[in-house]
Length: 379
Ligand code: SF4
Image (cartoon, rainbow, N blue to C red):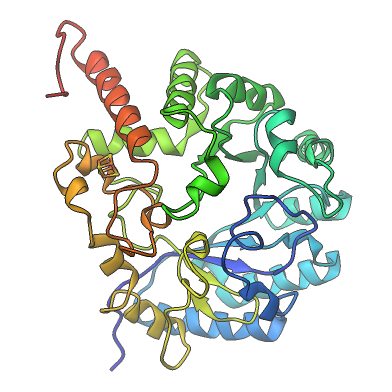
């Protein structure tokens, strides 16, 4: 009899392993892992069939809604007909069990056919845009070294003017301010924003952020939080929602902070199941911890084994275990804890910033809950 130890509800399909952009911070192409070179450029329908077989095997054991994100590289490098055939197969094979289908895109290749397909198949859209033109064009370059802001903004406007709700995924540029970034994104007319803390490890931070003043990331996020709080337009920011939820004793919905287990399975374009893709900033091959018969069931049962993700996640440093913000932060995002010397047994490389940010939000929550007290929730 087959059994399922751990169910991971979300799959990220790397439907295209290459990208038309070449962002300088990209963990796929510009850090330590070069395994994309061995991947087929696109995921085939045959590979997709095998993934659906695997999902249907799991559904026989545990009926549970499935969430799928089409990811890359850049998923819209797929030809429109291939894209539609792919979506049709997913819908046919998974039926009502597929409760959420979305795409993560740089929006530079959006055209009227993609827009029609997005609407027809009710695909959620998240666009990578790093806030202002200045920040975006600093990092998000094409292969000729030109900034991609204008093309991305054009794509976003096409989506919004077609009535499509867009989430903006912004990698934080800690050399700038969070409040002005918030307002630049809000001006576009979106209701959801996600902010990603830059992916570096203890070994690579110096290379990418050696000029960064102390607390620059915390100050960025605090100014973002203040602006977000002042604004009553209902914009959602997952990073802050997670911190507030953890302060109040809840469970964060994302893996932006540690302790939450593996939120999703990465499926490479050749159909291999892998761990959290941002771990590619740590070392070559860091996401490949899968041995066995190559099914999703086997992967889900073994990511929690002795060599697995959760063991890394629970290997907290002494500093974290003694930290008053541990219950909220849990050492931060797993890739940010890595060093060649200690593996994942470190505090986050962004520790000082996380500590300051969590203290700040804790105080804001306490002021909100207990407006007449002066020093609650920080001891
Ligand atoms: S704030 Fe720093 S010490 Fe505290 S849990 Fe987070 S990473 Fe660890």
